[in-house]
Image (cartoon, rainbow, N blue to C red):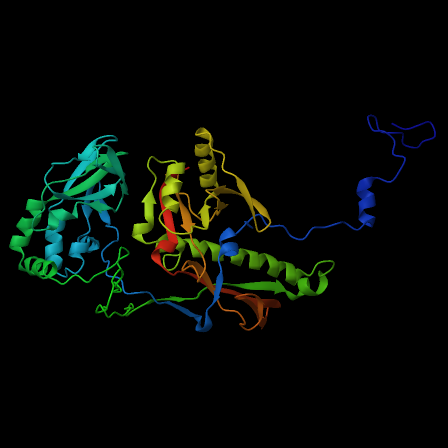
Amino acid sequence: MTSQSGHPGPTPGLAAQHSLAPAAARNLTTTTKTPPQMQGISSRWLLRILPWVETTGGTFRVNRRLTHTLGDGRVEFVATGADIAVIPAELREIPLLRGLADEAALSALAGRFEQREHTAGETVVSPGDPAQLILIAHGKVKRTASGKYGEEVSLGVLAGGDHAGEQALSPDPGEWEQTLTALTKCTVLALRAEEFREVADRSPALRSYLDAYLSRAIPRQNRRGEASIELASGHAGEVLLPGTFVDYESSPREYELSVAQTVLRVHTRVADLYNHPMNQVEEQLRLTVEALRERQEHEMVNSRDFGLLHNAAPSQRIHTRSGPPTPDDLDELISRRRKTQYLLAHPRAVAAIGRECSSRGIHPPQTELHGATVRTWRGIPLLPCNKIPVGEDGTTSVLAMRTGQDDQGVVGLHQTGIPDEIEPGLNVRFMGVGEKALISYLVSAYFSAAVLVPDALGVLEDVEV
């Protein structure tokens, strides 16, 4: 459409523009920018609460008193379809079979186990039943006994890998004295006492091993399994006092510092031309360090070598009574050690704990820790840690710990003063400029974690969230 003067007229539907448009005006302005943001940064409570011990030479040795407790691990199984069998060598996790070296005898014993399936609520073994060794292959089993006045007394929960009824392997097995009740659908393997004796009669190696084991001198030890320190008390007059010494482990465990590393590359053109108002190398390095610290916490929780989930003693691992993390479960977890200082759980587990408390009308108080408000249980901070995994079946774990060398707890390990250090135990080393004009920096974090005594760390397992 044109006007009578020949100039184009206004386009129908569009208002006439009388000033500079904002889109065009922005070309003349300076924008306000944030530093690069990163969603993967978490609270990293584990790294914040652990006392860090200087580890000169990259190795930390944990010296302990000599302990006589053996074979307190868990038994593993192999499945072929619906058939489950115990791995013969895993029978050495049962204390009485710990030193049995004869593979043929172990295989013969493994072949004598009977597989049984039980539904929830069904009795697995009851008092008066013949003695038998029970291995829990799958599911949860509640263990109870009759108390002094005939009441039912809970003796805890057994789950996959646990065993009960070791007295079936003794010369005088007697009868079963406890009740095992399936809490969930479960699979157990049972070895009757007569089956064990039949294998022992046919195996000279097993028979001689049992004779030597049962006739051995049992060293005196305390309730923790440590060699006793002989003392005298309550006496009067000139009494001959006992002599004693404190024995140590001859091969103490050593923790070597682990490392998380990456090579950061920045093009020289980026570093030369695009450094205002923010330094590109510094921002790249800042986010790389954040990612390394996240990986560090992940390894300190999940590493099979030194991670907390895999280094808790079997005696310090317990299972939930029903599934969700109830106040009763948390109380049992913290009662396993003196001075429990922290509880760590996946955020979903923290929410599940909150739901269980709310359903019972319990409202635990909150406290302030490192400038943040956190939930507590019995006055113990309950801290979220998203590095604790949640399995496909919706179960996870809750960690309870005592920290610090003075309290014989859990400690973090690092070495400071390393070359080109920018944070404790973390350095950035210039590697040069390559033929493609890429500046390279080697970024390394050195760390580990150590549990000084077994009761410093406990795990509540099979927590349904």
